[in-house]
Structures are given as structure tokens and as C-alpha cells.
Amino acid sequence: MAILKPSSRTKPTSKPRSPIFLITLTISLITIIYLSSTLISNNGSNPLEKTRKFTSSHLNNNNEKFLYWGNRIDCPGKHCDTCAGLGHQESSLRCALEEAIFLQRTFVMPSRMCINPIHNNKGILHHSENVTSEEMWAASSCAMDSLYDLDLISSKVPVVLDNSKTWFRAMSTGMKLGSRGVAHVEGVSRVDLKERSQYSKILLINRTASPLSWFMECKDRNNRSSVLLPHSFLPSMAAKKLRDAAQKIMALLGDYDAIHVRRGDILNTRKDRFGVARTLHPHLDRDTRPQFILCRIAKWVPQGRMLFIASNERTPNFFSPLSTRYKLAYSSNYSSILDPVVENNYQLFMIERLILAGAETYIKTYKESETDLSLTDDRKKNTKVWQVPVYTKEGC
Ligand SMILES: *[C@@H]1O[C@H](CO)[C@@H](O)[C@H](O)[C@H]1NC(C)=O
Ligand SMILES: *[C@@H]1O[C@H](CO)[C@@H](O)[C@H](O)[C@H]1NC(C)=O
Ligand SMILES: *[C@@H]1O[C@H](CO)[C@@H](O)[C@H](O)[C@H]1NC(C)=O
Ligand SMILES: *[C@@H]1O[C@H](CO)[C@@H](O)[C@H](O)[C@H]1NC(C)=O
Image 1 (cartoon, protein in one colour):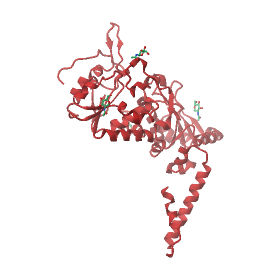
Image 2 (cartoon, rainbow, N blue to C red):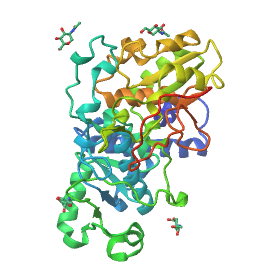
Image 3 (cartoon, rainbow, N blue to C red):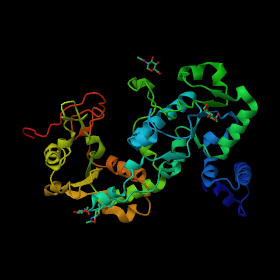
Image 4 (cartoon, rainbow, N blue to C red):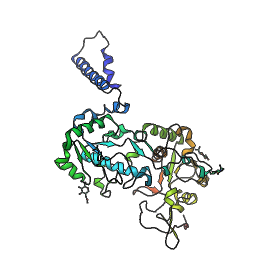
């Protein structure tokens, strides 16, 4: 512990002691006494809380006020079992964290995140030959701190888990204070919560969303100035063991480029009243096939490069045609690093995202911002217009 270092200078020396030395000694002693009393008072609590005591935002617990959004993180407007995965759940969570930043409150984080079983397929890591007998990971939820580094998040916006001592203490204080301690604020705007004194002074703001879904997405996403956290925030807050695994794989990949190829469930079609299959992304199935990928990325990825492919495509060897131009690598190449760490698909996806983000050139499935390179020109968000899929393309 760096803070204990000055005490090593208390070894007897023959030199006369300067006043500065004595001041340093006094400060170190006070620090040591303070630290040990904190440790003793915390004995038996979970180790995460213990370390979090030392972050500046948690030294001053007396003024800490809380924002609670419910006990599970669903998709915006949907329960977990109909949610399309981690990225969607993160958009809810990011919205909640932004509200906590805006209100300068500690966010009460659900201690577990639900996992939609449809997206928790072990075959993604172990390229199994038999697609119908894919093994599933059993988990229907996972611990929040197995996905995210809560200390790292707290350095930007303080968070506590809803199974932590801090939160239990806050709830009992809130209960004692009655209506001065807890406010239930369904539907009250963020600005009112900040500015109206009946809310701003309250210990706990309980913004439990509708019973249909606990979490929601921030409206007003198009107003740039109201967005306080970038999309990349939560992906970069991965738990340490996930970051370490990504680092190891990146070191083995060396200098590499990467593509994220989303196929699977998003290729779903539905029949219109004439029996014609229609889809929300008419060019996606075509644009994510190897021959079209080769053509599209040739101008961005030179021949011979190492290309890391993250995909939910299940057909074995689906991307092999890309090996005519590139050295290919998948997560499945690194199962000796991943197997000891990864227990579910959300953790695997967190690691893959770090690897994708670390590539020299990264090509996404959809273009999400002006500077993105993408495999398709179809828009990511389309919930209304169902079109007939297109499989042909002229030129490259
Ligand atoms: C694939 O899975 C099916 C259904 O579980 C099983 O009947 C079949 O024997 C498996 N095939 C191989 C090659 O393992
Ligand atoms: C928050 O509100 C919900 C719904 O009204 C309630 O079930 C829950 O117990 C409340 N939690 C706290 C900590 O006040
Ligand atoms: C955008 O958000 C900011 C900050 O929340 C607000 O002051 C502004 O009025 C909003 N602009 C529009 C056009 O809604
Ligand atoms: C990854 O595994 C595939 C076979 O699944 C192999 O063709 C490829 O060369 C491997 N890539 C690396 C970088 O080891």
C-alpha cells in the first residue's frame, strides 16, 4: 500500500529530525490510524466494499444520496426473456447512470443481470459441428460484478450494489425518515428531481419504472447535449478478469484488424399476406456472407492481415472463404484462455468487444456513427419497414 510508505522512514537514524519530517510522521500516523479503524469497522463485509471505502466519493458517506431504478436490468420497455441481449440492457443501464450523474447521486445497481437464454449458447465459443445439439450455458442471470468493474464505474459515477451494506443501511435510514427519506417518483422529470426541493433533499429517490419493465431507455437520445456517457462507456468498464483475458488474446493476435458480423436472429424474416418473406434489414444476409465481406473490406484491410472475426453465425466454417486473403482468428482459437474465465455469453461478448475495439481497423456490422466502417449500409434501427431481402449485387 503506497500510503504506508512514509512509516518506513521512522527507522532510527543518527541525523537530527527536521520539522518537516515530524509533520510527515504525524500525518502518516493519523492516516494509519484512520485506515485501520476503517478496516476494523468493515470487518466481515464483502471485499469489494472494503476497497471502495478508499475511493474519494465514498469517504464522505454522510452526504451520499441514492437513486434506485429497480432490482433488475431489462431491455428498454421489455422483460429480459424478450430482450435481444446485453447491448440493449446496457442502453437502459447507461440511461440510469446518466440520471445519477445529472442528479449527483449514487446509483443503486442491481446485483445481478438477467441473461436471455436464447443468447446464451455455448456453441459460439466451441465451434461445435452439430448445430442442433449445441450445449447451452445454464445461467439465467449473472453477478453484476462478474461483468463490470464497479470501482472503475464508480470513478465516473458512484455505484453501490443492491445487496451491499451501504444500501441496506441507506434503506433503513430512509424508512426511519419516512416521507423525508424516500420519494417514489414514477414519471417525474429529471430536471424536476434536481431542482424541486421536495426531491433534491431526499435520501432515496425510487424511480422504479413500470411493472412491465424495471428499466427504460432515456428518451431524448437525439439531443447530444443531454447524453452524458458515450456508448463505449460500459464496454470499457469490463471486470478485471475479462479485461485481462482480452489483453492476453490481443497480445497473441499482435497487429490485427477485426470485423463484427451480426447474423443469427437479426436475419429473421416474416411472411407478408402474399406469403413473401420480408425482413427489417434487406441487405444484411447478403452483406454478411463471406464473398461480399471480402469484396467490401478489401479497400480497408490489406491482404495477409490477421483478421479477428466475432460473430453469432453458427454454421461451421462459414467464414473460411475469407482465408484466401487473410489469417483468420476467432474466440474459439483461444478457448484455453477463455474457458477458465467465461461462464456465459455476456462475459464472452464483453471480452470480444474489447478485442474488436483494440483492432487497428475495426469494421462493424452497421454504421453507428459518421466515422464507422461497416459491412452493410442497412440502418441498425428499423422497427417498421419490412422489405424483401436482396441477394444480388453488381460490382463490389
Ligand atoms: C446431432 O444432434 C442430434 C440431436 O441431438 C443427434 O440425433 C445426432 O446424432 C447428432 N449428430 C452428431 C453427428 O453428433
Ligand atoms: C421502490 O418502489 C417499488 C414500487 O413502488 C417498491 O416495490 C420498492 O419496494 C421500492 N423500493 C424502495 C427501496 O423504496
Ligand atoms: C437538449 O438538452 C439540454 C440539456 O438537457 C437542454 O437544455 C436543451 O433544451 C435540449 N434541447 C432540445 C432541443 O431539446
Ligand atoms: C483458428 O482456428 C481455425 C480453425 O478453426 C484455423 O483455421 C485458424 O488458422 C486459427 N487461427 C489462429 C490465429 O490460430
